[in-house]
Image (cartoon, rainbow, N blue to C red; front, side):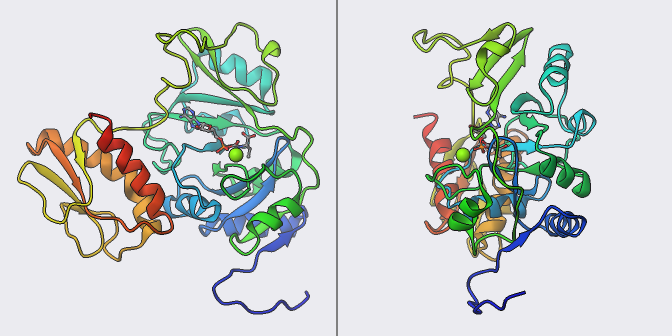
Length: 325
Ligand code: TXA
Ligand code: MG
Protein backbone atom coordinates (compact mmCIF):
# COMPACT_ATOMS: atom_id res chain seq x y z
CA UNK A 1 0.00 0.00 0.00
CA UNK A 2 1.23 3.46 -0.86
CA UNK A 3 2.11 5.60 2.15
CA UNK A 4 -0.06 8.68 2.46
CA UNK A 5 0.87 11.88 4.27
CA UNK A 6 -0.17 11.81 7.92
CA UNK A 7 -2.73 14.50 8.61
CA UNK A 8 -3.85 13.93 12.17
CA UNK A 9 -7.23 15.66 12.02
CA UNK A 10 -8.26 13.84 8.82
CA UNK A 11 -9.00 10.13 8.79
CA UNK A 12 -7.69 7.91 6.03
CA UNK A 13 -10.50 6.64 3.87
CA UNK A 14 -9.67 3.14 2.63
CA UNK A 15 -10.91 1.97 -0.72
CA UNK A 16 -12.12 -1.63 -0.47
CA UNK A 17 -12.67 -4.02 -3.36
CA UNK A 18 -15.70 -6.33 -3.42
CA UNK A 19 -13.68 -9.41 -2.47
CA UNK A 20 -14.06 -11.65 0.59
CA UNK A 21 -11.43 -9.55 2.34
CA UNK A 22 -13.11 -6.30 1.30
CA UNK A 23 -16.53 -7.40 2.55
CA UNK A 24 -15.19 -8.67 5.85
CA UNK A 25 -13.21 -5.46 6.45
CA UNK A 26 -16.29 -3.38 5.62
CA UNK A 27 -18.49 -5.49 7.90
CA UNK A 28 -15.94 -5.20 10.75
CA UNK A 29 -15.78 -1.43 10.33
CA UNK A 30 -19.58 -1.19 10.50
CA UNK A 31 -19.69 -3.46 13.55
CA UNK A 32 -17.23 -1.19 15.36
CA UNK A 33 -19.28 1.94 14.66
CA UNK A 34 -17.44 2.98 11.49
CA UNK A 35 -18.83 4.55 8.34
CA UNK A 36 -18.59 2.73 5.02
CA UNK A 37 -19.86 4.04 1.68
CA UNK A 38 -21.21 1.29 -0.56
CA UNK A 39 -22.90 1.04 -3.95
CA UNK A 40 -26.60 0.36 -4.36
CA UNK A 41 -28.37 0.14 -7.71
CA UNK A 42 -29.63 3.72 -7.19
CA UNK A 43 -26.72 5.74 -5.75
CA UNK A 44 -23.84 5.16 -3.33
CA UNK A 45 -25.02 5.18 0.28
CA UNK A 46 -23.08 6.31 3.35
CA UNK A 47 -23.65 3.38 5.69
CA UNK A 48 -23.52 2.98 9.45
CA UNK A 49 -25.02 0.46 11.89
CA UNK A 50 -28.67 1.55 12.21
CA UNK A 51 -28.72 0.34 15.86
CA UNK A 52 -25.73 2.47 16.86
CA UNK A 53 -26.69 6.05 17.68
CA UNK A 54 -23.12 7.33 17.58
CA UNK A 55 -22.57 5.78 14.15
CA UNK A 56 -25.78 7.35 12.85
CA UNK A 57 -24.79 10.72 14.33
CA UNK A 58 -21.46 10.26 12.55
CA UNK A 59 -23.31 9.94 9.23
CA UNK A 60 -24.88 13.37 9.75
CA UNK A 61 -21.55 14.83 10.87
CA UNK A 62 -19.69 13.45 7.83
CA UNK A 63 -22.33 14.82 5.46
CA UNK A 64 -22.45 18.14 7.28
CA UNK A 65 -26.24 17.97 7.28
CA UNK A 66 -27.77 20.97 9.05
CA UNK A 67 -30.93 19.02 9.96
CA UNK A 68 -31.96 15.50 10.94
CA UNK A 69 -34.13 13.77 8.34
CA UNK A 70 -35.04 10.18 9.01
CA UNK A 71 -32.80 7.77 7.08
CA UNK A 72 -33.48 4.66 5.03
CA UNK A 73 -32.59 1.35 6.70
CA UNK A 74 -31.08 -1.16 4.27
CA UNK A 75 -31.57 -4.87 4.94
CA UNK A 76 -30.54 -8.12 3.25
CA UNK A 77 -34.02 -9.56 2.72
CA UNK A 78 -37.64 -9.57 3.82
CA UNK A 79 -36.87 -11.72 6.87
CA UNK A 80 -34.45 -9.11 8.17
CA UNK A 81 -36.89 -6.32 7.32
CA UNK A 82 -39.54 -8.01 9.48
CA UNK A 83 -37.26 -7.70 12.50
CA UNK A 84 -37.71 -3.93 12.30
CA UNK A 85 -41.01 -3.13 10.61
CA UNK A 86 -44.59 -4.42 10.76
CA UNK A 87 -45.77 -5.74 7.39
CA UNK A 88 -49.45 -6.00 6.56
CA UNK A 89 -50.76 -7.83 3.50
CA UNK A 90 -50.23 -4.87 1.19
CA UNK A 91 -46.69 -4.27 2.43
CA UNK A 92 -45.88 -7.95 1.85
CA UNK A 93 -47.25 -7.71 -1.66
CA UNK A 94 -45.09 -4.66 -2.43
CA UNK A 95 -42.01 -6.33 -0.96
CA UNK A 96 -42.69 -9.45 -2.98
CA UNK A 97 -43.09 -7.49 -6.19
CA UNK A 98 -40.35 -4.86 -5.85
CA UNK A 99 -37.63 -6.25 -3.59
CA UNK A 100 -34.79 -6.41 -4.09
CA UNK A 101 -34.90 -3.11 -5.94
CA UNK A 102 -35.18 0.68 -5.83
CA UNK A 103 -38.33 0.80 -3.68
CA UNK A 104 -38.42 2.01 -0.08
CA UNK A 105 -41.38 1.16 2.15
CA UNK A 106 -42.38 3.39 5.07
CA UNK A 107 -43.91 1.04 7.64
CA UNK A 108 -44.80 0.97 11.35
CA UNK A 109 -41.70 0.52 13.48
CA UNK A 110 -41.70 -2.62 15.64
CA UNK A 111 -41.59 -2.00 19.39
CA UNK A 112 -38.59 -4.29 19.70
CA UNK A 113 -36.81 -3.00 16.57
CA UNK A 114 -33.80 -1.72 18.49
CA UNK A 115 -32.94 0.92 15.91
CA UNK A 116 -31.35 4.20 16.96
CA UNK A 117 -34.02 6.87 17.32
CA UNK A 118 -31.85 9.13 15.22
CA UNK A 119 -32.45 6.82 12.22
CA UNK A 120 -36.21 7.29 12.44
CA UNK A 121 -35.90 10.87 13.76
CA UNK A 122 -38.05 9.72 16.66
CA UNK A 123 -40.98 8.66 14.45
CA UNK A 124 -42.96 5.47 14.95
CA UNK A 125 -42.42 4.48 11.32
CA UNK A 126 -39.30 3.32 9.53
CA UNK A 127 -38.22 3.64 5.88
CA UNK A 128 -36.75 0.31 4.81
CA UNK A 129 -35.49 -1.32 1.63
CA UNK A 130 -33.70 -4.34 0.22
CA UNK A 131 -31.25 -3.06 -2.39
CA UNK A 132 -30.63 -5.10 -5.54
CA UNK A 133 -26.97 -4.28 -6.10
CA UNK A 134 -24.94 -7.47 -5.55
CA UNK A 135 -22.23 -5.57 -3.62
CA UNK A 136 -24.82 -4.02 -1.27
CA UNK A 137 -26.44 -7.41 -0.73
CA UNK A 138 -23.13 -9.13 -0.06
CA UNK A 139 -22.20 -6.40 2.45
CA UNK A 140 -25.58 -6.74 4.21
CA UNK A 141 -25.11 -10.50 4.41
CA UNK A 142 -21.56 -10.15 5.75
CA UNK A 143 -22.63 -7.53 8.31
CA UNK A 144 -25.84 -9.41 9.13
CA UNK A 145 -27.56 -6.28 10.43
CA UNK A 146 -29.44 -3.14 9.38
CA UNK A 147 -27.43 -0.41 7.62
CA UNK A 148 -28.70 3.18 7.75
CA UNK A 149 -27.62 5.05 4.64
CA UNK A 150 -28.42 8.36 3.01
CA UNK A 151 -26.73 9.18 -0.29
CA UNK A 152 -22.96 9.39 0.18
CA UNK A 153 -22.44 13.06 -0.67
CA UNK A 154 -21.82 16.15 1.43
CA UNK A 155 -25.07 17.91 2.31
CA UNK A 156 -26.35 19.92 -0.63
CA UNK A 157 -24.17 18.02 -3.10
CA UNK A 158 -25.11 15.72 -5.94
CA UNK A 159 -25.82 12.05 -5.20
CA UNK A 160 -22.77 9.95 -6.10
CA UNK A 161 -22.98 7.15 -8.65
CA UNK A 162 -19.29 6.17 -8.64
CA UNK A 163 -16.76 5.46 -5.90
CA UNK A 164 -14.65 8.38 -7.17
CA UNK A 165 -17.57 10.78 -6.55
CA UNK A 166 -17.74 9.56 -2.96
CA UNK A 167 -14.01 10.01 -2.48
CA UNK A 168 -14.16 13.54 -3.92
CA UNK A 169 -16.97 14.51 -1.54
CA UNK A 170 -16.31 12.54 1.64
CA UNK A 171 -12.69 11.34 1.43
CA UNK A 172 -10.99 11.96 4.77
CA UNK A 173 -14.33 12.01 6.62
CA UNK A 174 -15.36 8.34 6.48
CA UNK A 175 -13.62 5.03 7.17
CA UNK A 176 -13.96 3.31 3.83
CA UNK A 177 -15.50 3.19 0.38
CA UNK A 178 -16.51 -0.16 -1.01
CA UNK A 179 -15.94 0.20 -4.74
CA UNK A 180 -18.62 -1.51 -6.79
CA UNK A 181 -18.33 0.47 -10.01
CA UNK A 182 -21.08 2.58 -11.49
CA UNK A 183 -24.68 2.64 -10.15
CA UNK A 184 -27.15 1.49 -12.79
CA UNK A 185 -30.24 3.52 -11.81
CA UNK A 186 -28.54 6.76 -10.82
CA UNK A 187 -31.70 8.04 -9.17
CA UNK A 188 -32.78 7.54 -5.55
CA UNK A 189 -35.35 4.89 -4.62
CA UNK A 190 -39.07 5.47 -4.89
CA UNK A 191 -40.57 5.87 -1.41
CA UNK A 192 -44.11 4.65 -0.74
CA UNK A 193 -46.20 4.18 2.36
CA UNK A 194 -48.80 1.40 2.24
CA UNK A 195 -51.60 2.40 4.58
CA UNK A 196 -55.24 1.38 4.93
CA UNK A 197 -55.12 -0.60 1.69
CA UNK A 198 -53.65 2.29 -0.32
CA UNK A 199 -50.13 2.89 -1.56
CA UNK A 200 -49.13 6.52 -0.98
CA UNK A 201 -46.27 7.99 -2.97
CA UNK A 202 -43.84 9.93 -0.75
CA UNK A 203 -40.96 10.39 -3.18
CA UNK A 204 -40.61 9.61 -6.88
CA UNK A 205 -37.55 7.59 -7.80
CA UNK A 206 -36.13 4.50 -9.44
CA UNK A 207 -39.43 2.59 -9.71
CA UNK A 208 -41.71 4.53 -12.10
CA UNK A 209 -45.07 5.48 -10.60
CA UNK A 210 -46.95 3.73 -13.41
CA UNK A 211 -45.37 0.42 -12.42
CA UNK A 212 -47.01 0.54 -8.97
CA UNK A 213 -50.58 -0.77 -9.08
CA UNK A 214 -53.13 1.42 -7.30
CA UNK A 215 -50.59 4.10 -6.45
CA UNK A 216 -52.11 7.11 -4.73
CA UNK A 217 -50.26 10.25 -5.77
CA UNK A 218 -50.90 13.08 -3.31
CA UNK A 219 -52.91 15.96 -4.71
CA UNK A 220 -50.71 18.98 -4.06
CA UNK A 221 -53.59 21.35 -4.71
CA UNK A 222 -55.85 19.78 -2.08
CA UNK A 223 -54.74 21.20 1.24
CA UNK A 224 -56.80 18.77 3.25
CA UNK A 225 -55.33 15.67 1.59
CA UNK A 226 -53.72 13.88 4.53
CA UNK A 227 -50.95 12.46 2.37
CA UNK A 228 -49.55 15.62 0.83
CA UNK A 229 -45.83 15.70 1.61
CA UNK A 230 -46.07 18.98 3.50
CA UNK A 231 -48.56 17.46 5.91
CA UNK A 232 -46.84 14.17 6.37
CA UNK A 233 -45.33 14.12 9.84
CA UNK A 234 -41.73 13.67 8.84
CA UNK A 235 -40.53 14.65 12.30
CA UNK A 236 -41.30 13.72 15.83
CA UNK A 237 -42.44 16.72 17.85
CA UNK A 238 -42.89 16.45 21.61
CA UNK A 239 -46.35 17.17 23.00
CA UNK A 240 -44.95 19.27 25.81
CA UNK A 241 -43.90 22.86 25.25
CA UNK A 242 -40.18 23.22 24.76
CA UNK A 243 -37.87 26.09 25.67
CA UNK A 244 -34.30 26.35 24.33
CA UNK A 245 -31.05 27.84 25.65
CA UNK A 246 -32.10 27.38 29.26
CA UNK A 247 -29.49 27.42 32.04
CA UNK A 248 -31.94 27.27 34.92
CA UNK A 249 -35.24 25.43 34.56
CA UNK A 250 -38.57 26.47 36.07
CA UNK A 251 -40.37 24.10 38.45
CA UNK A 252 -42.76 22.89 35.78
CA UNK A 253 -39.97 22.14 33.29
CA UNK A 254 -38.25 18.84 32.71
CA UNK A 255 -34.64 19.88 32.12
CA UNK A 256 -32.50 18.24 29.44
CA UNK A 257 -28.91 19.16 30.22
CA UNK A 258 -25.80 19.39 28.09
CA UNK A 259 -22.19 19.49 29.27
CA UNK A 260 -21.91 21.37 32.56
CA UNK A 261 -25.51 22.56 32.44
CA UNK A 262 -27.26 19.88 34.49
CA UNK A 263 -30.73 18.45 34.05
CA UNK A 264 -32.88 15.43 34.94
CA UNK A 265 -31.12 13.86 31.96
CA UNK A 266 -28.05 15.06 30.08
CA UNK A 267 -27.55 14.79 26.30
CA UNK A 268 -23.81 14.53 26.88
CA UNK A 269 -22.07 15.25 30.16
CA UNK A 270 -18.79 15.64 28.23
CA UNK A 271 -20.34 18.16 25.87
CA UNK A 272 -19.85 15.73 22.97
CA UNK A 273 -22.17 16.73 20.11
CA UNK A 274 -22.08 13.27 18.47
CA UNK A 275 -23.26 11.71 21.73
CA UNK A 276 -25.86 14.46 22.13
CA UNK A 277 -27.23 13.89 18.62
CA UNK A 278 -27.43 10.14 19.24
CA UNK A 279 -29.45 10.78 22.42
CA UNK A 280 -31.62 13.64 21.18
CA UNK A 281 -34.83 11.95 20.03
CA UNK A 282 -34.79 9.31 22.76
CA UNK A 283 -34.43 12.06 25.40
CA UNK A 284 -37.20 14.16 23.89
CA UNK A 285 -39.44 11.08 24.19
CA UNK A 286 -38.36 10.54 27.81
CA UNK A 287 -38.95 14.19 28.71
CA UNK A 288 -42.32 14.08 26.99
CA UNK A 289 -43.39 10.99 28.93
CA UNK A 290 -42.08 12.42 32.19
CA UNK A 291 -43.93 15.63 31.47
CA UNK A 292 -47.05 13.59 32.16
CA UNK A 293 -45.87 11.35 34.99
CA UNK A 294 -43.72 13.86 36.92
CA UNK A 295 -46.15 16.71 36.62
CA UNK A 296 -43.55 18.69 34.74
CA UNK A 297 -45.61 19.81 31.81
CA UNK A 298 -42.84 21.52 29.88
CA UNK A 299 -39.38 20.75 28.55
CA UNK A 300 -36.31 22.96 28.88
CA UNK A 301 -33.08 22.32 27.02
CA UNK A 302 -29.60 23.60 27.86
CA UNK A 303 -27.73 25.72 25.29
CA UNK A 304 -26.17 23.64 22.51
CA UNK A 305 -23.25 25.28 20.66
CA UNK A 306 -23.87 26.07 16.99
CA UNK A 307 -20.93 24.05 15.70
CA UNK A 308 -20.76 20.65 14.01
CA UNK A 309 -23.86 18.58 14.79
CA UNK A 310 -24.99 21.36 17.15
CA UNK A 311 -26.49 23.11 14.10
CA UNK A 312 -28.78 20.15 13.35
CA UNK A 313 -29.62 19.69 17.04
CA UNK A 314 -30.61 23.35 17.37
CA UNK A 315 -32.62 23.14 14.14
CA UNK A 316 -34.63 20.23 15.56
CA UNK A 317 -35.15 21.95 18.92
CA UNK A 318 -36.19 25.17 17.22
CA UNK A 319 -38.87 23.33 15.23
CA UNK A 320 -40.05 21.59 18.39
CA UNK A 321 -40.21 24.89 20.29
CA UNK A 322 -41.95 26.70 17.45
CA UNK A 323 -44.55 23.98 16.81
CA UNK A 324 -47.01 25.49 19.34
CA UNK A 325 -46.54 29.15 18.50
O1 TXA B 1 -31.88 5.25 -3.26
C1 TXA B 1 -31.96 5.65 -2.11
O2 TXA B 1 -33.04 5.70 -1.51
C2 TXA B 1 -30.64 6.08 -1.43
C3 TXA B 1 -29.77 4.83 -1.35
C4 TXA B 1 -28.48 5.08 -0.60
O3 TXA B 1 -30.50 3.78 -0.77
N1 TXA B 1 -30.88 6.63 -0.13
C5 TXA B 1 -31.49 7.84 0.07
O4 TXA B 1 -31.59 8.23 1.39
O5 TXA B 1 -31.90 8.53 -0.82
P1 TXA B 1 -31.91 9.71 1.87
O6 TXA B 1 -31.55 9.77 3.33
O7 TXA B 1 -31.27 10.72 1.00
O8 TXA B 1 -33.46 9.84 1.73
C6 TXA B 1 -34.32 9.28 2.69
C7 TXA B 1 -35.69 9.83 2.50
C8 TXA B 1 -35.85 11.22 3.04
O9 TXA B 1 -36.57 12.01 2.11
C9 TXA B 1 -36.67 11.01 4.31
O10 TXA B 1 -37.47 12.11 4.65
C10 TXA B 1 -37.49 9.80 3.92
O11 TXA B 1 -36.61 9.00 3.20
N2 TXA B 1 -37.91 9.03 5.10
C11 TXA B 1 -37.14 8.28 5.90
N3 TXA B 1 -37.85 7.74 6.91
C12 TXA B 1 -39.12 8.18 6.76
C13 TXA B 1 -40.33 7.98 7.48
N4 TXA B 1 -40.38 7.23 8.58
N5 TXA B 1 -41.45 8.59 7.02
C14 TXA B 1 -41.41 9.36 5.90
N6 TXA B 1 -40.29 9.59 5.17
C15 TXA B 1 -39.17 9.01 5.60
MG1 MG C 1 -29.64 12.54 -0.85
